[in-house]
Amino acid sequence: MSLIMNTFELCLEVVVLCALSFTYIKNALHMFQQNRYELYRYSRWLFDRKNHNFSVSLIFAGLLAGVCLRFSGFQAVCYVLFLDLIFALYLLYAESKKTYIKELVLTPRVKRQIVCFSILWLIFVLCSMTFIDIWFISIMMMIMPYFFIFLVGALTYPMEERIKKGYENEARDILDTNSNLIKIGITGSYGKTSTKNIITDILSDHYLTLMTPASYNTPMGITRTVREMMKPIHEVFVCEMGADKVDDISYLMDFVKPKYGIVTSIGPQHLNTFRSMDNIIKEKMNEIEMLPADGVGFINLDNEYIRDYEIKNTCRIISVSIDNEDADYRATKIVYSRSGTSFSLKIGKRYYKFQTALLGKHNVTNTLIGIALGIELGMSVKEIQKAVANIRQVEHRLEIKKINGYTFIDDAFNANPLGSKMSLDVLSMMPERRVIVTPGMIDLGEKEDEINYEFGTYMKDRADFVILVGEKQTECILKGLIDSGFKENGYLVTNNVREAFDYVYTHFSVNDTILLENDLPDAFNK
Image (cartoon, rainbow, N blue to C red; front, side, top):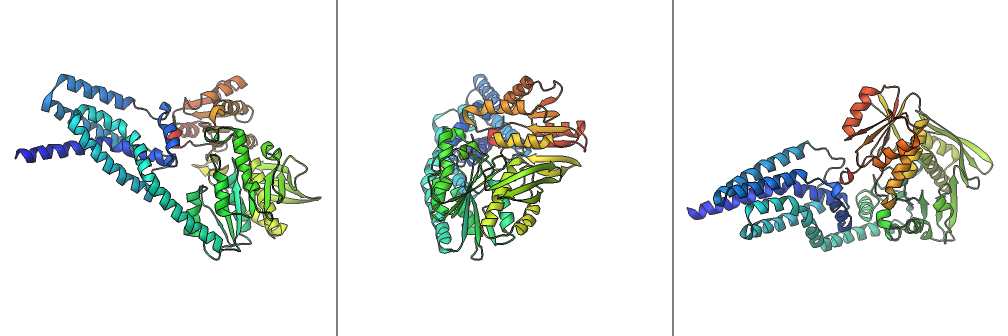
């Protein structure tokens, strides 16, 4: 009987402790996924104390310590387990009420991590119960999951690499087998996804076209696209290529081997991992440098980093621009409205009229690239004009939409210094009151505060009212607003997006225009 009771007590303690740690384990796995399963990126998130708040857990830890000082023996264990259970239920309830920008996705990789984590965690709990008091183990249940990720990541890494390499080799074989496939590679600090969508919409009027979906711009994303979506009937493959560290583009160029390469723009994006602008420039321009001799590179002359770069490749280069008269394709007479954008395209000495539902100067540039590529691949100007008029708005990228009768310009996806200024230029041309809702920009290294400050100063005369989301995150934007002389009653700081929307719906009318600029990932919210 005594053995049964001891076994029951042990099982009860294990269950309660695992229940207590469940929410923390889920959060750790979630953040590991959002940091691309990279231990370096995850460690930066983990040790940035702004990214997660342990205050409630510390209060609970103090309560447990107080119980153990007041009681002892079996009585203390019972009280601790009871408090553990209550706190575990509170955490589960709080977790069920949370809304994430991007939920934890139970991919096969995450499932393998969960199995590994569960085994290691159970061993850790059982071993700890042998040597450590129950109250201290309870505290460890709230802290150790975040550090166990390092062990899980290290142990599963060799297996994940073998799995990834096997899938990637299959994708390489598919690409190599289809020798007639027209392959187009797209990179840039900003504008990759928008340009990819624009090109696909234009070329789809003439070719059976496949593009990498969403932001599938990593080796694994491209691998999945090729393995799961590519068919023998496809004539064109439009491949977005992302990079946040040196050699990323070189690897993807060797993987896909495109004949046509596009660099949309270059700027201070991912400076934390690239370390310098020089590294960013060289890596992005590898898209052009690694093209074959009979390849064609498309570049944006409005970007100073691209314009000033000396290309070390003899392949043909086609340039587009809005401001540079020497470009092969140049847009003039640009007009924005709630229905989209109109512009004239100069090719040589001739002008052609274009109309698109897209907004923003950068989208005009991206469209120029699509037009230039379409002509290069044999489409007529008339055919392209029709295709451009039918280009679909890209979700969350200066997308005009109606929400509860209000007009929003949704530019919530991954704001950057250049794009944020262009979105404000678009907002400035809208009728009635002009409102911007933003949490600012991230992942800009040492220049982050400076860039957000400039963003704040740029709002003057382009927005009538500013709603900042997150007090700490938007401190530099607020300072820029104040220093620029923005009217004192023309801005508001809210704690979250819900508060911002509530304010919009109660203080503005359906005739006003609201710009939603950036939406930070859960790993970066402050």
